[in-house]
Image 1 (cartoon, rainbow, N blue to C red):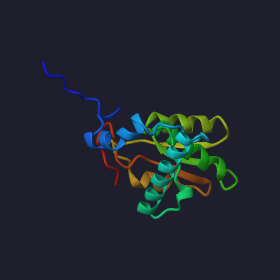
Image 2 (cartoon, one colour):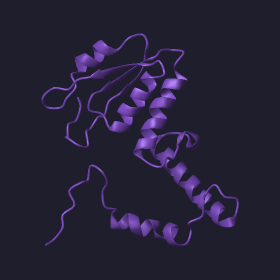
Image 3 (cartoon, one colour):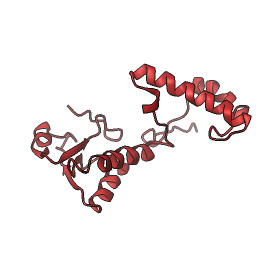
Amino acid sequence: MKRIYMDHAATTPTDIEVVKAMEPYFTQKYGNPNSIHSFGQEAREVVEEARKKIAHLIGANPSEIIFTGGGTESDNFAIKGIAWANQKKGNHIITSKIEHHAVLHSCQFLEKHGFRVTYLPVDKCGLIDPGDVKKAITDQTILATIMHANNEIGTIEP
């Protein structure tokens, strides 16, 4: 019986073109880019070149590109970083009840540290009413974090 993988919301198979492009870094150029030896320095050059290419592609400065270990770390880094950096401007965050757990857990953590979080409901189709977003905004709002395209239920927010 042929097996069919049905959990693409959690992770997806790596495309063969990506595997081919990355093979040298899995088998020959695998140094830690933070190490001072030649293997590490070679890896550092590749990482910095990738950083420059991504920055150019999106019109950013390379110093603005940060690599993380994955989505959960990225969500935590962004949400907590924005909150702490802007806490003198306000302490209110807006999110939805159906965000990824990394987002919800970051918001819950921040609530324990004095931030106020509004959790917007969704309708029967899994959509947030833009009017609810507008009503939730206050002069203390420093962040609205709402998933544009939901990877589990397939909704695309307006």
